[in-house]
Amino acid sequence: MAEVREHKLVKLVIGMFTNRLELFQEALKALEKRFGPVDYESPLLPFAKTDYYEEEFGKDLKRKFYSFKRLIKAEDLLRIKIFTNNLEKKFSKEENRLFNLDPGYLAPAKLVLATTKDYQHRIYYGKGIYGEVTLRYKKGSFIPWEWTYPDYRTKEYIEIFNHIRKIYMEQLRW
Image 1 (cartoon, rainbow, N blue to C red):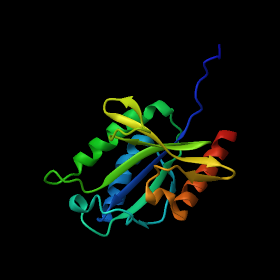
Image 2: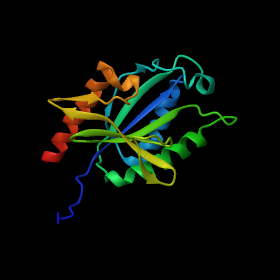
Image 3: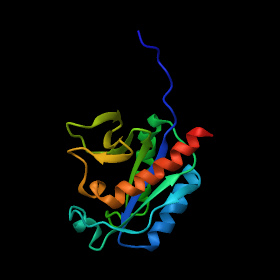
Image 4: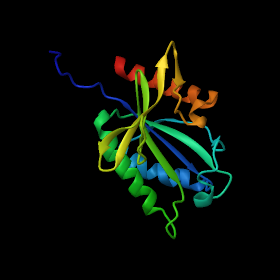
């Protein structure tokens, strides 16, 4: 029988998109209050690989990714997703969200995202939250799966997650 061991701490990553650029700073304040300081903030990226969110948010969406200095337990993703969903609701106007938050974590071999949508490749965490291994790390870089969202397949996103992984791997060496 294999011995049960604690999972290594993982790196919290949160993606955010909106078409109201001032909300990046407002949301970031709330996120840092809860999760501590950010150690990486991506450049502003176009969020244009889908029109799925256009009716709710409008056009010209932009995205940023943040990673947080303080490492977390992988199982904390459930409560983090519930927190980010509640934060979206807090900032909503007339039943419409003003921004979308996508929390996940980066481990040495994968990027896991939290979602409220079930599908064949997602694992149930509890309380209506699922986890999806969105990218895997192989031969020096993250690579997508067949189900990986189109934007997460792009060179820009892969470079961002490779950069965050370098920060994380340095933290593990300390």
